[in-house]
Amino acid sequence: MENIELIAAQVNEVLEQLRPYLQRDGGDVEYVGFQDGIVQVRLLGACVGCGVSDVTLYQGIETALVEEVPGVIGIEDVTEHERAAELDRYYFDLAEEIKKLNDESKDE
Image (cartoon, rainbow, N blue to C red; front, side):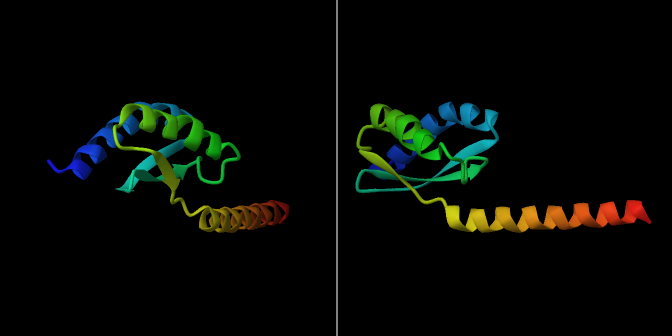
């Protein structure tokens, strides 16, 4: 097994150990890649746009990976936070419109 494949397997093993804590709050994390000692991860679910996602990333995930996986020196968040925020606004507006339509139909 190549070094990068070994590191990827070890990273995924650590992420599997952390995953239940993230999922408990509706979030998750996914391994994307590894380059020059940096693990690329993508946050999913409730972690996207969460106000404490940086704490989760750097004090939780990064700390665990650096301690547990030889060759890892840090992480990079590749989550598309801006796109997720746009989708959140879209679905919020859509939910408000549906609520408005439902209220109007009750009045009839």
